[in-house]
Image 1 (cartoon, rainbow, N blue to C red):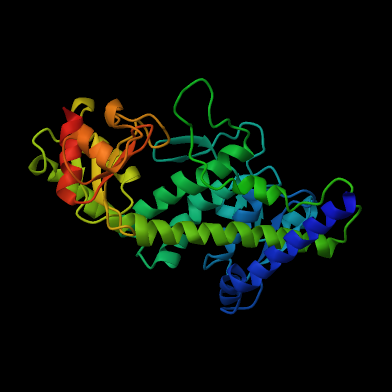
Image 2 (image 1 turned 45 degrees about the vertical axis):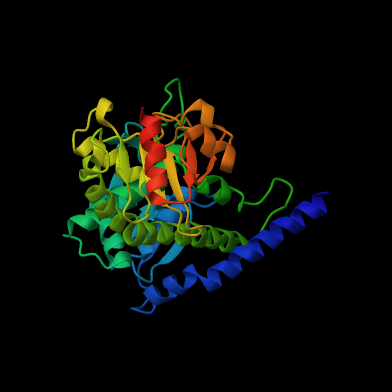
Length: 362
Protein backbone atom coordinates (compact mmCIF):
# COMPACT_ATOMS: atom_id res chain seq x y z
CA UNK A 1 0.00 0.00 0.00
CA UNK A 2 2.87 2.36 0.76
CA UNK A 3 4.35 1.62 -2.68
CA UNK A 4 1.04 2.40 -4.36
CA UNK A 5 0.64 5.62 -2.41
CA UNK A 6 4.16 6.79 -3.22
CA UNK A 7 3.62 5.93 -6.87
CA UNK A 8 0.44 8.03 -6.89
CA UNK A 9 2.34 10.92 -5.29
CA UNK A 10 4.95 10.61 -8.02
CA UNK A 11 2.32 10.56 -10.75
CA UNK A 12 0.65 13.60 -9.22
CA UNK A 13 3.91 15.52 -9.23
CA UNK A 14 4.58 14.46 -12.81
CA UNK A 15 1.18 15.81 -13.82
CA UNK A 16 1.83 19.09 -12.05
CA UNK A 17 5.23 19.43 -13.67
CA UNK A 18 3.66 18.89 -17.07
CA UNK A 19 1.17 21.57 -16.19
CA UNK A 20 4.09 23.83 -15.37
CA UNK A 21 5.53 23.28 -18.83
CA UNK A 22 2.19 23.78 -20.58
CA UNK A 23 0.83 26.68 -18.62
CA UNK A 24 2.23 28.90 -15.96
CA UNK A 25 5.95 28.33 -16.51
CA UNK A 26 5.44 29.94 -19.89
CA UNK A 27 4.44 33.10 -18.07
CA UNK A 28 7.35 32.79 -15.64
CA UNK A 29 9.82 32.29 -18.49
CA UNK A 30 8.36 35.28 -20.30
CA UNK A 31 8.93 37.39 -17.23
CA UNK A 32 12.44 35.98 -16.80
CA UNK A 33 13.38 36.84 -20.38
CA UNK A 34 12.96 40.54 -19.70
CA UNK A 35 16.22 40.83 -17.82
CA UNK A 36 19.00 39.06 -15.93
CA UNK A 37 18.10 37.08 -12.83
CA UNK A 38 19.75 39.47 -10.37
CA UNK A 39 17.01 39.64 -7.72
CA UNK A 40 16.51 36.95 -5.08
CA UNK A 41 13.32 36.21 -3.17
CA UNK A 42 13.63 34.31 0.09
CA UNK A 43 11.15 32.09 1.86
CA UNK A 44 11.48 29.41 4.52
CA UNK A 45 12.74 25.90 3.94
CA UNK A 46 10.92 22.76 5.07
CA UNK A 47 7.19 22.19 4.66
CA UNK A 48 5.68 24.77 2.33
CA UNK A 49 2.22 26.26 2.28
CA UNK A 50 -0.07 27.92 -0.21
CA UNK A 51 0.60 31.45 0.96
CA UNK A 52 4.37 31.63 0.40
CA UNK A 53 4.14 29.64 -2.85
CA UNK A 54 1.61 32.11 -4.23
CA UNK A 55 3.43 35.07 -2.69
CA UNK A 56 6.63 34.12 -4.50
CA UNK A 57 4.73 33.73 -7.76
CA UNK A 58 3.08 37.13 -7.33
CA UNK A 59 6.36 38.91 -6.69
CA UNK A 60 7.83 37.36 -9.83
CA UNK A 61 5.00 38.95 -11.85
CA UNK A 62 6.05 42.47 -10.84
CA UNK A 63 8.42 44.72 -12.74
CA UNK A 64 10.65 44.94 -9.69
CA UNK A 65 11.12 41.19 -9.25
CA UNK A 66 10.71 39.91 -12.79
CA UNK A 67 13.13 37.03 -13.33
CA UNK A 68 14.03 36.72 -9.65
CA UNK A 69 15.27 33.43 -8.24
CA UNK A 70 13.87 31.71 -5.14
CA UNK A 71 15.99 30.89 -2.08
CA UNK A 72 14.49 28.59 0.57
CA UNK A 73 16.24 28.97 3.93
CA UNK A 74 15.69 29.90 7.57
CA UNK A 75 19.23 31.24 8.07
CA UNK A 76 18.87 34.88 9.23
CA UNK A 77 22.24 35.82 7.77
CA UNK A 78 21.24 34.55 4.33
CA UNK A 79 17.77 36.14 4.56
CA UNK A 80 19.37 39.51 5.34
CA UNK A 81 21.15 39.48 1.97
CA UNK A 82 18.01 38.85 -0.11
CA UNK A 83 15.97 41.41 -2.03
CA UNK A 84 12.61 40.21 -0.67
CA UNK A 85 11.63 37.80 2.11
CA UNK A 86 8.25 36.09 2.37
CA UNK A 87 6.68 34.20 5.29
CA UNK A 88 9.83 34.08 7.40
CA UNK A 89 12.05 36.48 9.30
CA UNK A 90 9.50 38.01 11.65
CA UNK A 91 9.34 41.35 9.81
CA UNK A 92 6.61 43.14 7.89
CA UNK A 93 8.11 46.15 6.14
CA UNK A 94 6.98 46.83 2.56
CA UNK A 95 9.70 49.46 2.16
CA UNK A 96 12.29 46.65 2.31
CA UNK A 97 10.00 43.99 0.81
CA UNK A 98 9.71 41.95 4.00
CA UNK A 99 6.37 40.15 4.15
CA UNK A 100 6.07 37.96 7.23
CA UNK A 101 2.89 37.69 9.33
CA UNK A 102 3.93 35.34 12.14
CA UNK A 103 5.41 37.90 14.52
CA UNK A 104 3.65 38.78 17.76
CA UNK A 105 1.35 41.76 17.43
CA UNK A 106 0.82 41.48 13.69
CA UNK A 107 -2.84 42.05 12.83
CA UNK A 108 -2.68 43.49 9.32
CA UNK A 109 -5.75 43.25 7.09
CA UNK A 110 -6.43 44.06 3.45
CA UNK A 111 -8.73 47.01 4.10
CA UNK A 112 -11.76 47.97 2.01
CA UNK A 113 -14.01 46.47 4.69
CA UNK A 114 -12.20 43.11 4.86
CA UNK A 115 -11.23 42.04 8.37
CA UNK A 116 -9.38 38.74 7.73
CA UNK A 117 -5.80 38.71 8.99
CA UNK A 118 -3.37 38.64 6.08
CA UNK A 119 -0.98 35.84 5.21
CA UNK A 120 2.25 36.46 3.31
CA UNK A 121 0.37 36.09 0.00
CA UNK A 122 -2.19 38.65 1.11
CA UNK A 123 0.56 41.07 2.09
CA UNK A 124 2.19 40.82 -1.31
CA UNK A 125 -1.18 41.18 -3.04
CA UNK A 126 -2.04 44.22 -0.92
CA UNK A 127 1.05 46.07 -2.10
CA UNK A 128 1.57 44.69 -5.61
CA UNK A 129 -1.82 43.25 -6.54
CA UNK A 130 -3.08 46.19 -8.52
CA UNK A 131 0.08 46.28 -10.63
CA UNK A 132 -0.23 42.54 -11.28
CA UNK A 133 -3.95 42.72 -12.10
CA UNK A 134 -3.28 45.60 -14.48
CA UNK A 135 -0.51 43.67 -16.22
CA UNK A 136 -2.58 40.51 -16.62
CA UNK A 137 -5.86 42.18 -17.58
CA UNK A 138 -4.63 45.10 -19.66
CA UNK A 139 -6.64 47.52 -17.51
CA UNK A 140 -4.73 50.67 -16.52
CA UNK A 141 -4.05 50.83 -12.78
CA UNK A 142 -5.89 54.15 -12.50
CA UNK A 143 -9.01 52.70 -14.19
CA UNK A 144 -11.80 52.12 -11.63
CA UNK A 145 -12.46 48.78 -13.32
CA UNK A 146 -8.94 47.66 -12.40
CA UNK A 147 -9.85 48.43 -8.80
CA UNK A 148 -13.06 46.40 -9.18
CA UNK A 149 -11.13 43.35 -10.41
CA UNK A 150 -8.44 43.84 -7.75
CA UNK A 151 -11.08 43.71 -4.99
CA UNK A 152 -13.08 40.88 -6.60
CA UNK A 153 -9.97 38.68 -6.85
CA UNK A 154 -9.19 39.33 -3.20
CA UNK A 155 -12.74 38.51 -2.08
CA UNK A 156 -13.21 35.41 -4.20
CA UNK A 157 -9.68 33.97 -4.35
CA UNK A 158 -7.11 35.54 -2.04
CA UNK A 159 -9.04 35.94 1.20
CA UNK A 160 -9.56 32.20 1.69
CA UNK A 161 -5.80 31.65 1.43
CA UNK A 162 -5.22 34.30 4.10
CA UNK A 163 -7.90 32.89 6.37
CA UNK A 164 -6.87 29.25 6.10
CA UNK A 165 -3.19 30.00 6.67
CA UNK A 166 -4.13 31.93 9.82
CA UNK A 167 -6.47 29.20 11.07
CA UNK A 168 -9.70 31.18 10.72
CA UNK A 169 -12.87 29.08 10.52
CA UNK A 170 -15.10 29.80 7.57
CA UNK A 171 -18.13 29.29 9.80
CA UNK A 172 -18.57 29.80 13.53
CA UNK A 173 -22.03 30.25 14.97
CA UNK A 174 -23.18 32.65 12.27
CA UNK A 175 -25.08 31.36 9.25
CA UNK A 176 -23.04 33.54 6.88
CA UNK A 177 -19.51 32.41 5.93
CA UNK A 178 -16.66 34.70 6.90
CA UNK A 179 -15.02 34.27 3.53
CA UNK A 180 -15.45 32.59 0.15
CA UNK A 181 -13.54 29.36 -0.51
CA UNK A 182 -14.08 28.37 -4.13
CA UNK A 183 -10.85 26.45 -4.77
CA UNK A 184 -9.57 24.57 -1.68
CA UNK A 185 -6.19 25.51 -3.11
CA UNK A 186 -4.46 25.49 0.28
CA UNK A 187 -5.20 21.79 0.78
CA UNK A 188 -4.03 20.87 -2.70
CA UNK A 189 -0.75 22.70 -2.24
CA UNK A 190 -0.27 20.89 1.07
CA UNK A 191 -0.57 17.58 -0.74
CA UNK A 192 2.57 18.39 -2.75
CA UNK A 193 4.72 18.14 0.39
CA UNK A 194 6.49 14.82 1.09
CA UNK A 195 4.44 12.28 3.03
CA UNK A 196 5.65 11.08 6.41
CA UNK A 197 7.27 7.84 5.22
CA UNK A 198 8.75 9.08 1.97
CA UNK A 199 12.23 9.41 3.45
CA UNK A 200 14.71 12.24 3.18
CA UNK A 201 14.49 13.98 -0.17
CA UNK A 202 17.21 16.00 -1.86
CA UNK A 203 17.16 19.77 -1.88
CA UNK A 204 16.57 19.60 -5.63
CA UNK A 205 13.47 17.42 -5.20
CA UNK A 206 12.07 19.68 -2.48
CA UNK A 207 12.66 22.75 -4.64
CA UNK A 208 10.94 21.00 -7.55
CA UNK A 209 7.92 20.41 -5.35
CA UNK A 210 7.89 24.04 -4.23
CA UNK A 211 8.09 25.15 -7.86
CA UNK A 212 5.16 22.84 -8.58
CA UNK A 213 3.24 24.61 -5.80
CA UNK A 214 4.16 28.00 -7.30
CA UNK A 215 2.92 26.81 -10.68
CA UNK A 216 -0.34 25.46 -9.27
CA UNK A 217 -1.14 28.61 -7.29
CA UNK A 218 0.04 30.87 -10.10
CA UNK A 219 -2.05 29.14 -12.75
CA UNK A 220 -5.19 29.46 -10.65
CA UNK A 221 -4.44 33.07 -9.72
CA UNK A 222 -4.06 33.99 -13.40
CA UNK A 223 -7.28 32.13 -14.18
CA UNK A 224 -9.06 34.10 -11.45
CA UNK A 225 -7.84 37.45 -12.75
CA UNK A 226 -8.81 36.52 -16.31
CA UNK A 227 -12.29 35.45 -15.20
CA UNK A 228 -13.01 38.57 -13.15
CA UNK A 229 -11.58 40.90 -15.78
CA UNK A 230 -13.03 39.30 -18.90
CA UNK A 231 -16.26 37.61 -17.76
CA UNK A 232 -17.33 38.88 -14.35
CA UNK A 233 -16.65 42.58 -14.95
CA UNK A 234 -18.49 42.96 -18.32
CA UNK A 235 -21.52 41.23 -16.80
CA UNK A 236 -21.93 43.97 -14.21
CA UNK A 237 -23.19 46.55 -16.70
CA UNK A 238 -25.80 44.13 -18.07
CA UNK A 239 -27.12 43.24 -14.61
CA UNK A 240 -27.19 46.90 -13.56
CA UNK A 241 -29.16 47.94 -16.64
CA UNK A 242 -31.69 45.10 -16.23
CA UNK A 243 -32.03 45.76 -12.49
CA UNK A 244 -32.78 49.43 -13.10
CA UNK A 245 -35.46 48.46 -15.67
CA UNK A 246 -37.11 45.69 -13.63
CA UNK A 247 -40.29 47.69 -12.94
CA UNK A 248 -41.02 47.68 -16.66
CA UNK A 249 -41.14 43.86 -16.50
CA UNK A 250 -43.39 43.68 -13.46
CA UNK A 251 -44.58 46.65 -11.43
CA UNK A 252 -43.69 44.84 -8.21
CA UNK A 253 -40.01 44.97 -9.12
CA UNK A 254 -39.67 41.38 -7.95
CA UNK A 255 -38.65 39.95 -11.34
CA UNK A 256 -35.30 40.56 -13.02
CA UNK A 257 -35.30 39.70 -16.74
CA UNK A 258 -31.79 39.24 -18.10
CA UNK A 259 -31.66 40.62 -21.62
CA UNK A 260 -28.49 38.57 -22.04
CA UNK A 261 -27.43 35.68 -19.86
CA UNK A 262 -24.32 36.41 -17.81
CA UNK A 263 -22.94 35.71 -14.30
CA UNK A 264 -25.51 37.62 -12.26
CA UNK A 265 -25.56 36.35 -8.68
CA UNK A 266 -22.70 38.24 -7.06
CA UNK A 267 -23.57 41.38 -9.03
CA UNK A 268 -27.20 41.30 -7.94
CA UNK A 269 -26.41 41.24 -4.23
CA UNK A 270 -23.76 43.95 -4.57
CA UNK A 271 -25.92 46.19 -6.75
CA UNK A 272 -28.98 45.86 -4.52
CA UNK A 273 -26.82 47.03 -1.64
CA UNK A 274 -25.26 49.86 -3.63
CA UNK A 275 -28.64 51.05 -4.90
CA UNK A 276 -30.18 50.94 -1.42
CA UNK A 277 -32.84 48.38 -2.37
CA UNK A 278 -34.67 47.29 0.77
CA UNK A 279 -35.56 43.73 1.68
CA UNK A 280 -39.21 44.20 0.70
CA UNK A 281 -38.22 45.39 -2.77
CA UNK A 282 -35.52 42.83 -3.50
CA UNK A 283 -35.61 40.69 -6.63
CA UNK A 284 -37.32 37.36 -5.96
CA UNK A 285 -36.92 35.70 -9.39
CA UNK A 286 -34.43 36.00 -12.24
CA UNK A 287 -35.65 35.00 -15.72
CA UNK A 288 -33.11 34.16 -18.42
CA UNK A 289 -32.56 32.01 -21.49
CA UNK A 290 -30.52 28.84 -21.15
CA UNK A 291 -28.01 29.38 -23.96
CA UNK A 292 -27.44 25.66 -24.50
CA UNK A 293 -30.97 24.27 -24.43
CA UNK A 294 -32.64 27.43 -25.75
CA UNK A 295 -35.27 27.15 -23.05
CA UNK A 296 -36.17 29.80 -20.52
CA UNK A 297 -35.51 29.54 -16.80
CA UNK A 298 -37.08 31.21 -13.79
CA UNK A 299 -34.73 31.00 -10.83
CA UNK A 300 -35.53 31.95 -7.28
CA UNK A 301 -32.86 34.22 -5.76
CA UNK A 302 -31.19 32.69 -2.70
CA UNK A 303 -31.13 34.50 0.63
CA UNK A 304 -27.34 34.87 0.42
CA UNK A 305 -24.84 34.00 -2.35
CA UNK A 306 -23.87 30.77 -0.56
CA UNK A 307 -27.30 29.81 0.75
CA UNK A 308 -29.57 27.03 -0.55
CA UNK A 309 -32.57 28.84 0.95
CA UNK A 310 -34.48 31.02 -1.52
CA UNK A 311 -36.02 34.42 -0.83
CA UNK A 312 -39.26 33.11 -2.33
CA UNK A 313 -39.10 29.56 -3.74
CA UNK A 314 -41.48 28.55 -6.50
CA UNK A 315 -44.87 27.34 -5.15
CA UNK A 316 -44.97 23.95 -3.37
CA UNK A 317 -47.74 22.68 -5.68
CA UNK A 318 -45.40 23.03 -8.69
CA UNK A 319 -42.36 21.29 -7.26
CA UNK A 320 -41.21 18.06 -8.83
CA UNK A 321 -43.73 18.28 -11.70
CA UNK A 322 -42.93 18.27 -15.43
CA UNK A 323 -44.49 19.07 -18.80
CA UNK A 324 -48.26 18.54 -19.16
CA UNK A 325 -48.88 17.88 -15.48
CA UNK A 326 -46.98 21.01 -14.49
CA UNK A 327 -48.68 23.09 -17.19
CA UNK A 328 -52.08 21.99 -15.89
CA UNK A 329 -51.23 22.93 -12.28
CA UNK A 330 -49.63 26.27 -13.21
CA UNK A 331 -52.43 27.09 -15.63
CA UNK A 332 -50.35 27.92 -18.71
CA UNK A 333 -49.09 25.64 -21.54
CA UNK A 334 -45.41 25.03 -22.30
CA UNK A 335 -44.08 24.48 -18.78
CA UNK A 336 -41.02 22.19 -18.69
CA UNK A 337 -40.14 21.48 -15.05
CA UNK A 338 -39.84 22.80 -11.52
CA UNK A 339 -37.10 21.46 -9.27
CA UNK A 340 -38.21 19.55 -6.17
CA UNK A 341 -36.76 22.27 -3.93
CA UNK A 342 -38.51 25.07 -5.82
CA UNK A 343 -35.33 26.99 -6.58
CA UNK A 344 -35.67 26.84 -10.37
CA UNK A 345 -38.17 26.07 -13.12
CA UNK A 346 -38.33 26.10 -16.88
CA UNK A 347 -40.61 27.04 -19.76
CA UNK A 348 -40.42 26.81 -23.53
CA UNK A 349 -40.73 30.56 -24.04
CA UNK A 350 -39.67 33.89 -22.57
CA UNK A 351 -43.24 35.04 -21.96
CA UNK A 352 -44.13 31.71 -20.38
CA UNK A 353 -41.22 31.94 -17.92
CA UNK A 354 -42.21 35.51 -17.05
CA UNK A 355 -45.79 34.40 -16.47
CA UNK A 356 -44.59 31.63 -14.18
CA UNK A 357 -42.62 34.18 -12.19
CA UNK A 358 -45.60 36.57 -11.97
CA UNK A 359 -47.92 33.79 -10.78
CA UNK A 360 -45.31 32.67 -8.22
CA UNK A 361 -45.07 36.21 -6.85
CA UNK A 362 -48.78 36.14 -6.07
